[in-house]
Amino acid sequence: MRDFSSKRSVILLSLIAGVLALIASGRAWINGTLNDGVLSTNAVDVTGNQAIPGYFGIALVACAGLLAAATAGRIARWPAGVISLLGSIAMVALTLRTLLDPASAVKSRMSSVTGHTGEAVARGEFTVWFWVAVFAALLALLSSVLGLLGLRRWHGLSSRYEAPVDGEAPKRSEESDWDLMSRGVDPTDRT
Image (cartoon, rainbow, N blue to C red; front, side, top):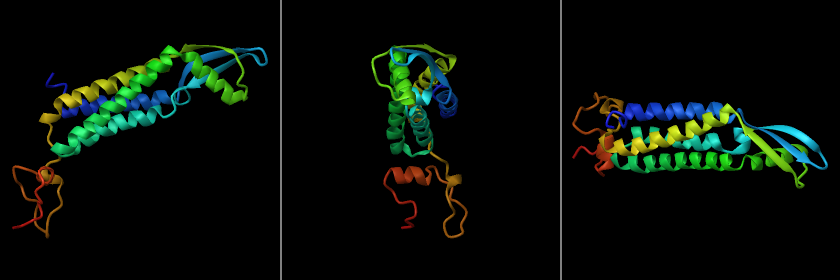
C-alpha cells in the first residue's frame, strides 16, 4: 500500500483519470430514442457534457486538488486532499445517477433540440464512452483516497525551487521555506 500512496503514483493515477474524463466528456455516452405522439420517434445522442454539465470541470477539481496537495506545505495538503476527494465523490455520484436514469438525459437533450417538453417515452443505451467516464471517476476516487493515505509522508517543494535572497545562492537547510511558513516562521527574517 505504501508504494501505491506515494506522491508519484497518486499524481500519475490522477492525471490518467483527468485525461480519460476529458476525452470521454465530449463523446456520446447515450444513444437514445424518444417516442412522442407529436414528434413520432426520434433518435438522439447524448454526450457526457450534455448528460452531466460540468463533468470535466469536476474532474479537473479532483486532479488539481491532488496536484496542490503534492506541492503544498504540510498544513495546506489536507484541505487540498479533501477537495480532491469531494470532487471525485461528485464524479462517481453523478455518473451513477446517469446510470440509474439514462431516460432523463435523453428527454432533456431531446427537449433542448426540439423545444418540445410534452410527455414522451425515452430509452437510452450506454456507449463505451460512458463506461470510460465511470472508470475515470472510480480512478479519480482511488487516487484521492490513496493521496489522503499518503499525505503524511509527502514533502512539499524542496528548497531548490526557492528564489535566492539578495543575490545569494539558495540556502540549504533541513526544512524548506515552505515548511517554515507552514509552521508560522518567516524564512526571510534574518534575526
